[in-house]
Image (tube, one colour):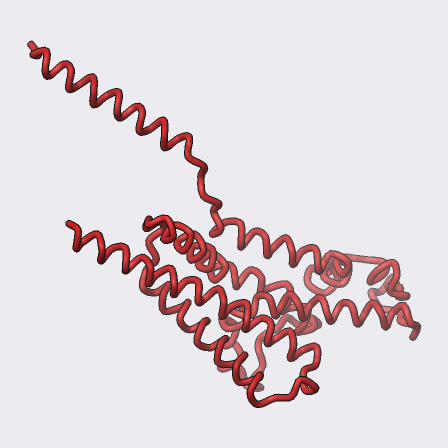
Length: 243
């Protein structure tokens, strides 16, 4: 048999637990940047490469197409040969394709780091690409997927920073994430500052501009991860002192 005080305590605990769970359920859930950043960059890259889907299908998947693009001024013969007639339309299309591939590769520059092994161990010092596939197109197609782990880590860093501002540790960043963020922050900041100090603005062309912009983006994302880990350390330290 339970005493009246035990019954009252059980009812109080049950009601408070129900109230706590109800309040937690009513709280807005934080935006999961670890999911949205990788998915968002894949969608953005897909939109940038969408006008050039025919050449991707032809070179990578060997799918029969009848032209590189409706406005490219090209035709594909029955034997797969490309009939190119020099014209302004084809030059505009080719320039737009190179720019789109360069933007996608620059946005996912960390993915190219994973391909360095193929260049280091190759006999000609170049990264591996399939036969008859242009290296710019290969980078634009593969680097977004190779960079997914880095976008995931960057998303976790943003989530951790926002939670740290609310004095909460969630998610808990690991030390290898701190090392990765430190490398991106130090490397990107060094390259950007070095360019500003030792180069004239007139030296900035489109390719170099994309590279510097990519380094700046990843320096910021790396800095977010470092700052979030530092704030988490401060929060954990202060909780230990109070305890």
